Length: 354
Image (cartoon, one colour):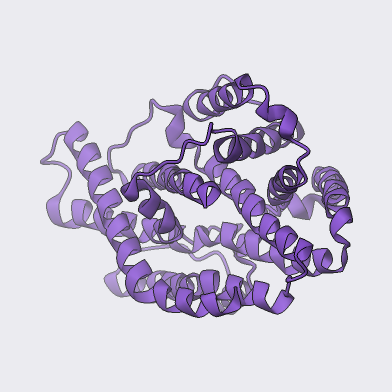
């Protein structure tokens, strides 16, 4: 499917942006030399937000198409989500808690725990890692916040859409997007902002995908300048600080619209050009693993450079290059073997529920 194929490289690049973002933060905290002159290095959160849009674009589209064909099953939908997301999610939960509560104390490396262990475990097990993330639990556990947001969203959106008639789905989603977007930014509902319940990114991704399915965006296909403008704006957003918006309401509105139009553009306004690079498409296929394992790789590489090699003997530029290359390489290796020997087992089971 061209839509999925063309979006695979995007998944990889977004995961890579998150990786270098966290590597920079970790380097600052641990005394490793770091790059600090490129805006793209500080766009990790934006990359996650585009991941949300992409997720809504694909998953809600699947729900809509299954409803339209009369084949939508809540059981099958949730089994597919469980088998794809939760095995690796709980593996990282186990690794994270083991690392911060057993490994670091054993090695005599200080790490401040700001939460009760039982509460932290319960929040993680019951898919509320975004709440735990507020207490700065450490990078390995911290990356799980976005997985929690996605799974929370699909826990209520699938049953809701199941009971909505197909021809009313788009209206319902637009109303939910507008209503939730406003509620999220009201001071009275500060808890939504506090724990990053940014469901509106997934909702607008779904809105755009269903607009396309209902042929309501054909007018954009007649204007070849549209994908060009959208792409330029996205590039400027990630590689410069020209569009820095201080007002959170306007920033979230701007990025919601921009990111959803970008995902739509590269999937449907691409002039039927399909990205055929096997490497990029494969990296996109394992991007979930790249996202989940990259902090583990950062910790391993940083430990080697700080405790084994030592950074005092290396030129700063060389250290920065080596740390980045080794971290990316190790992350890809971990993601590859995880996909092949761990995730694939569950993916094969997932096929039974298509």
